[in-house]
Length: 190
Image (spheres, one colour):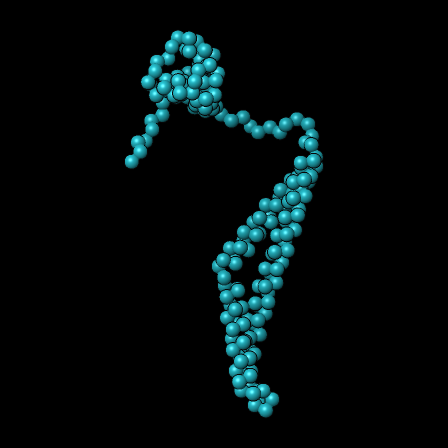
C-alpha cells in the first residue's frame, strides 16, 4: 500500500503554497532545477545562503503566524471595455441551434408519450367490445386483431413506464434549460 505523503513545512513549501506556485515555477524564479526544489522541500538538501537571498523577497510577504495558506481569491472582475462580438455571436448561434434541436427531440418524445396515453385510454373499451359476428370477421382474424390490441397495450405501458426514457427526458430538459440560460446571458452581453 502506498504511503501517505506528509506536506512539507519548509520555507520553500510555504512560499509555494501561499503564492500558488508549482515547483517548476519556483525553480524558474530562483534559477534552479525543479528536482533541486523538490530535494530542498523533502529535506534531502539544505537551503543555501544565495538561495535564501533570492527567496527572501517572497518569503517576507508570508503571513507572520501559522502555516502558509493560499492567498484569498480576489473577487471576480470583468475585463474593462466591451467584449468582441464575434465569439459571443458564434456561441449564441451554437446555443440557439442546439436548443432548437433539443426542442424538436422533446416534441417527438412528448408526441410518443401522448400517443401511448391515448392508446391506454381507448384499449380497455376496444378489448371489452363484443367480437364481431363470424359472418363479418372470421374467428382467426378476430383473434389476431385482439392479439394486436394486447401487444399495443403492452407497448404503450412500456413506453410510459420506461425509466431510461424518463432519464433521457430529464437530461434533455436540463440541457435545454442550460442552453437557453447561456443564450440569454450572451444576448445580454451583445
